[in-house]
Length: 242
Ligand SMILES: NC(=O)c1ccc[n+]([C@@H]2O[C@H](COP(=O)([O-])OP(=O)(O)OC[C@H]3O[C@@H](n4cnc5c(N)ncnc54)[C@H](OP(=O)(O)O)[C@@H]3O)[C@@H](O)[C@H]2O)c1
Figure 1 (cartoon, helix red, strand yellow):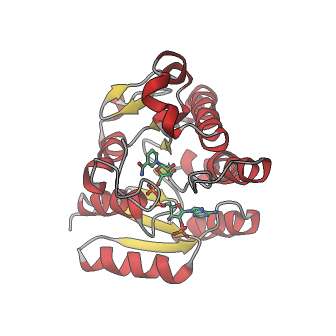
Figure 2: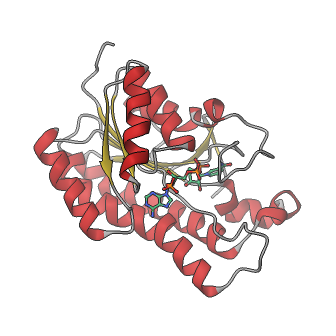
Figure 3: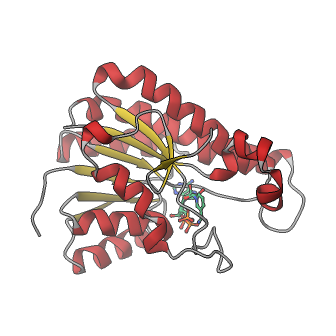
């Protein structure tokens, strides 16, 4: 494995899209740090990637836990001294349980899908500033696209829930704010829609395999800096409406 000295952190990487993004980047020579809220699950995923030839590491992180976030920042500073790519991937869709949504589900969803990426990114900005060609990639969803809801409601209405869709719409705005406010620190930011992908969250009904679903984030992580769509919402290389 030819390491490229790019330090990449992916949240929620013990399974699903996060693990596959880590695997694909690891196979391209990126050092990948898989975070997982369950230490054993993180270790298992890390071992699988190391076995495949990746320079993979794991850190336990519940993205909603401020102590975990502080410990992670400290560990990264001591171990790597910088961060090049942050993929805010961990996410939940509590409302897809067939029961009516409620304020508690909405609150918990916003906490994981929106507040946590904000808090984690804030804590890691000093490390990203030390990165080479630093990028933040926020794993969003077309279900957070207000333009799609406005103009193509029939396509998305079956999947629209208040907590999930507003969390991803909020994540899109967070991305725009990050792209604008972090540019002078040399940090780029984009939001990604992976597609509807077969994972625990996406379910077996999804048409897309996880290998293909990971590709949008992997392309954003690996493309030349001059091609990076700063402040855009991207699916498979093409911009989506906010
Ligand atoms: N699959 C799709 O069709 C699809 C479409 C659009 C967007 N997305 C987005 O893609 C991202 C990844 O989803 P996925 O499909 O790969 O789902 P997944 O297989 O269910 O994986 C979700 C990951 O997030 C982690 N997570 C949840 N809450 C967490 C917390 N509080 N702290 C740390 N980690 C936490 C999970 O950890 P545990 O294993 O411990 O639960 C898991 O590692 C999500 O942001 C999702 O919204 C997915």
